[in-house]
Every structure is written in structure tokens, then in C-alpha cells.
Amino acid sequence: MSDLTTDQLGPGKTPVPELYRSGRAKRARSRAYRLAAYAIGLTLLVAFGLTADWATIGEKYFDLERAKELFPEIVTVAAKNTLIYTVLAFVLGVVLGLSAALLRLSSIRPYRWAAAIYIEIFRGLPALLTIVFVGFITPIALGIRFPEVLGVSSAGIVALGLVAGAYLAETIRAGIEAVPPGQVEAARSLGMTHGQTLRKVVVPQAFRIVVPPLTNELVLLLKDTALLAVLGVTIDQKELTKFGRDAGAQGFNGTPLVVAGLLYLAITIPLTRLVSVLEKRNRVSR
Amino acid sequence: MTTPTPTPAADGHAPAIELRGLRKSFGTNEVLRGIDLAVEARQVVCVIGASGSGKSTLLRCVNRLEEPTGGSVLIGGIDITHPDCDLDLVRRNIGMVFQQFNLFPHLKAIDNVTLAQRQVLGRSASEARQVGLAVLERVGLTEKADAYPAQLSGGQQQRVAIARALAMNPDMMLFDEATSALDPELVGDVLEVMRQLAGEGMTMLVVTHEMGFARRVADHVVFMDEGVICEQGPPEQVLEHPATPRLQQFLEQVLEH
Image 1 (cartoon, each protein chain N blue to C red):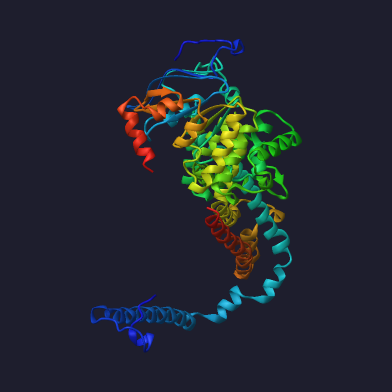
Image 2 (cartoon, rainbow over the protein chains, first blue to last red):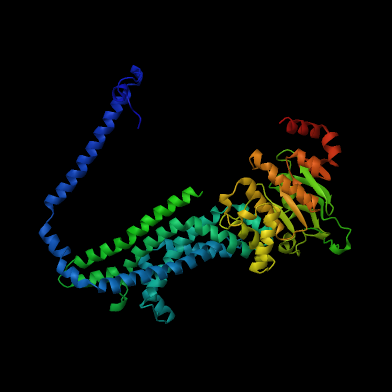
């Protein structure tokens, strides 16, 4: 902001001609807008503070005694399961996403169609429905039971992996397309095959490009594990949201959900910070 | 597509590179309109011409990075435009250097020069490294082996790119305006490496704007204009005594600078 006039610059500065003096009025106006914004924000906060029933909120949502009872299981079981669901679904999602991205870029038309259909279906369906379909319909349709993997339900992993894969496919495809065509030409001119070129030249560079958006997808996936609460699971398979809801069910107390929320934030905030660090680093090296 | 002409490479008479009636169109735009050209083994042929004259397209057709729409390309007498021809086998013997270097940015210099050796030639890690260090030494960059491309100057990157091609022990090298993207003070080092290669007897097809290089190093200079070879011959003849008005005009424009 360099709307400085002679008055602020002090003596010894060249006076600004009358025509350019309107800078002072603009400065005054932007100051007025800023003060108005502060006033609105403050009013809303105070209004909420005065009208809220703090006693009930404290009792129903911030009950320290109940919060204490949640530990250590909310960490050792629920948060741990949330992380297991997230990591396994992400791994499955990356595998599916990379495959779909490569098929989408294939020169063979039916491959492209198959990938497009997969992507459109699982991006278009609400994740909750996918979870229900996978968790309840496929066991009936195929006559199978989803086994337990690392102590959690593999139905949840498959459902979330399918959804994540559809989103990741588009992200990874964008990354692959961002690799300059000269890279492929250089590799092919050395006699490398199409597959070698993809594996050693294109995909490694594409992943470098998509690390920030990929981390973003990881955060979204972590939050989507909350939807797995609809699956009937054993006590040991509960993730954070299911755990919080069930723990609060007796006496209708929301404290467990608040604690679960804090645990989500404890994981997601460092991750989103990481994303912005990676984005900054990517920008510098380009 | 084309008639198979399985001339055996071993007969020793076939030129290193031979173009027969080569044509290339992009849509309705015909960029190459029937090119006949032969490059003998150990010969250096420079292709000059205004931008848009088709010289880069010609070069890119030689290893079929660009798919010819007519005519044929013979490498050591083998028709590589034949549908049965395994391009990957052909390309490993044809080194190519690009205007924009196209080094692999995620790999160190040494890994740039060893990747294809290992993937394509199946050399062991230690053998590939040995060859890699040797070719980096040839281009004067042994001490940059562990640098990433982004840490190198344009001239150094281009020399690594030359080393990357040389590491495959190619029979011939294609240069596509190898110095055009370089700052003027960095051009000399790259040209020096190319001159050295020519002196060692490498077969080279060079698309260039460097008239000095063409004059001193080329055995044969080809002037292209609007998709055809307009004039060709020894450098003294083509560059000093241009016969056609087009070439006279082109040389005047280039030499003004």
C-alpha cells in the first residue's frame, strides 16, 4: 500500500498535485470498511456468547469426567482404527487411481471407457451409499464375507478405497499430463519401451507434481472414514465417529463426539499444514 | 504403408541414414514434401533452413518420433517404416539430442546417463555407472555427476544430454537445434563437444542455425525450404556460393547478425 501523501511523508517530500490527492479519501474508506467488518464479527461473537446456554453445553458436551473415561480406548482403539482405515483405503485408492488414470490415457478405446465409467460412478455416488452398497449388498450378491484386515472391517476399506480411487484417478491423470511430452520423447529415443518410460520417467515425475493434491485427498479420506459408522462393526473395529457416538449414547451426552472431533483435528491440521508447505516447495522448484 | 525393402545392414554399402521420398503432413499442412537424402557412415550432415522449413520434422522422422505419412526411412539399409520393424531396437542405436535438453529432472546427472543403459541394454548398476562416468568425462562434467539437472546451467544440461545419448554407444547421433535454447556464452562448450564427436568419426545429422559450425565441421550441408531440399553440397559450395535466390536470401538474413 503506497497511498502515501505528502502529509505522512513529512517535510522535505515533494508535494502531491491536487489531482492525485484522492488517495487520502480512498485510504479513509478502506479503513472504514475494515472497522465495520471487525464490528460485525465482534457483535456476532458477543451475541452467541450471551444467548448460548453455557451450563447445558458444558454438561452435555464438555463433561471432563466423561471425557476422562474415554481414554485410553478412544486413542488406542478408535483413533488407531481411523488411521488404519485411512492408510489402507488410501493405498488401495492410489493403486486404483493410478490404474484408472493410465487406462484413461490409453490409446485403446474400451480401456478409456472402462476407466471413465468407474471414475464417473464412484465420484457421482455419495460415499455413504457406496459404503452401504459395498458393506451390505456385495456380501449378499457374491455370497462372501468381508474378512478382518489389521483388526478393521475390509468392507470399509474397499468402499473408501473405491471412492478415493475415483478422485485420485483424475488427480493423477492431471499429474501425468503435466509431464512435458519431451520427457517421453527423450526416453523413447533412447530405446526405452512404452512401459519402461511410464514406470521410470513419467509416473515418478507425475507423483512429484501431485503430492500436494494427493495429501489433500488423504485429509478428505480421513474425514470420510467417519461415514463407516453406518457399518455394523465389532467393538474393536470402531473408528472415531462410531466410537464417539456409541460412547455418548448413554445419557445423550456429546462429550465423546467433541473429544473425537479434537482428535480428528489433531491429525488433520498438521496434514493440511504439510500440504501448504509442499505446495510452496513445489512452486519454488518450478 | 511402404514396400518392405529388407536390405541387409551387413552388406556395408547401405548409407547410415537414407530417406526415400519422405513425406509428413500435420492435417492438411504438408511439412515434408518428398525428401531424398543419404548420410554415409562417419559423415556429418548439417541441415539448415528457416524456421518452419521442416528441418526438425525431418530429423524427428529419422527415429520415428514423428510418424512419416509417406516414403521410407532406412537405417543401415533397414526400412524402419516397415510395420514389423521393432522401433525400440532401432532407437537404441540412434542417439538424439533435443533443443530443450529433455533431461529427466527427477534424476541426478549420473542417473540420467545410466537409466537407459540399465533398462534397455540390461547393463549392471556398476557397469552402467562406469560407462556413465566415462561419457560424462567426455563432455567434461565428471564433477557434476551427482547434480540434478536444475542445478546445472543450460550448456551443462545439454552436455549431460549428449552424454546420455553416447552412453548407449549409438551408431549415429541426431542433433535437433542443440544450441538454440542456450545463452550465447554457453553455446561454445556444446559445439566443442559436437566438434570433438565429429572428429572421432561419429555419424551425425545436425539441424542447426550455427553457420560457423556447419562450415567448419560438416561434410555436407542441406538447405531446406518449404518442405523440400532446396540445395545441398559441400559447405564451401552451399554456404559461400549459394545457387538459388532462396538460399542467398536466407544466408544474408542469418549472417547479418
